[in-house]
Length: 170
Length: 246
Image: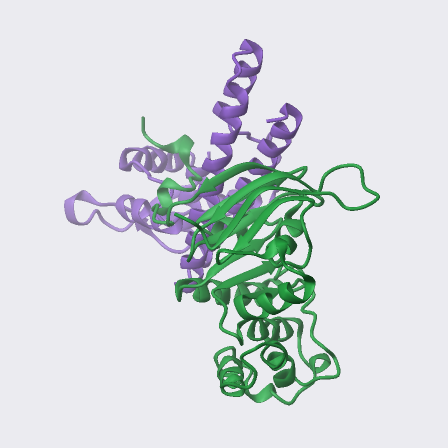
């Protein structure tokens, strides 16, 4: 879903061919979102089929074809961007499953698991805050936004584990 | 190896309060370490720092700083020891409003045994390093919160202590001033000082320290050693996991 709108958003800045879409998309997320070139071409084909984009100019080197937004694509992109996201909150499913199972099995591992999970979150906070600072010093506002989101989510994860530890008496 | 700070079975109970503020804490802090102490309000963080600074006494157990048993000293001995061996940075700066910036920075040196031996030169150098050289004659009320905290850091450093204790040093500052003060503590640590930082802010604790201890109800519930931050961005945060090829 998001790749579709990511492609539309990039094409809103001017015509691009598939490989340019891939590299610009990955650069936009500071290397945190790998995009398979096959996915890009499939997405371009679907967008063209739905008349949200259209080919522009002749095929160039190695058969590369540039695409541009159609008015319909422009309109869809505009309405998508302006709507807030209302999907369910995504928790760390594996962590949740381990905690629930550990509690259910009563295997006595929960306290140890919580403590080790807590350390993982602390280390991640260290790494993410360093990434945020690095992105700031490089003037990468997009990456700052991403790292900041990661920091705040990790803080919430840490608080979650702290509450569980307090309840568990761990 | 003996640490610069050693707590052994330290218990603290405040009069009129049933529960223990610290309940049998053992802690060894290595020379040159940057330790963060985390925990919710009332977990014993500030009590721990006050005991290390000799500003309070344990009910049982011992506190050693630089091998000296500060918990067994008289109040006057502890005060003298504190001025010579450690610097303390408070959340609310604790500057004297009737003294100028320079005079505030010089307070520990005038009270200590190293009185006036190069203190004025050191104080001016510190103010210069902290970007406050032109404020030396100003009174604290004329300065911003961030500037006041930098004056407090200069005061904590004027006797050149090896150990710095900071109790929520950014708690009263805006985020930019707070970041400057934390960068400053980071530089002091890089220059060889031991730093013990009390904070309830997990990101702050993790960002700057090598070790994070967590307190709850007066007990150490975790003691985590952190590695230097070297992980690439893609290993830390992903926005497009769903789109990744299998």
